[in-house]
Image (cartoon, rainbow, N blue to C red; front, side, top):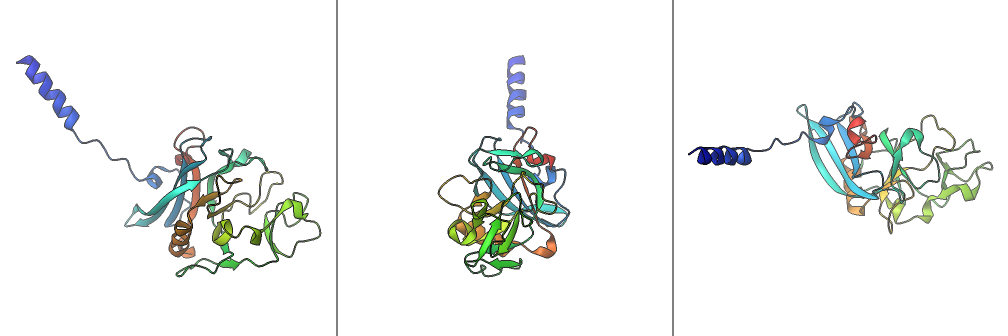
Length: 229
């Protein structure tokens, strides 16, 4: 009888429903203060793939609005505050999203400020330039072409993109420039976050500047855990 009781108790424990974890934004230290959020989560700092999810805050709770497979830097992820330029790592942290841009016209429903790429559009990454980590129309004399991205040359990746505000407001030379959320290329990125084109179109149609969306980039655990941001 004792054995039967013990087995019955064990069965009850095994059958007990497991607690459902709270949505990822609910477990984060900071979500930027808005009512929209994008999370880009990788398994660890050496990962080059993960998941991008976009969230809405409704009725006091975070609700998933969509998700897609994501790609990260070819050398994985690195803490944003200590990242170095040219390392092919995606910076972790919580960042605002200043504006969108693209080679193609903005997808239907896009409310975000959207800059159309032209043949004169560059992103300056020259540490010696006054235009460091900025879009420029026409390459300034102090920004070398070898230290800048000619945006129109990346017609696939930059068909649609969102600027990630990493090292943007007060740029620190040598930390990195030109970090975007954009359409997938052939493989891992040079430090950006990328997703399939359809997902990028959906994100742009979903994002509303008045709701102050941010993007949080991080890992499932460890010092760069996304829940720390």
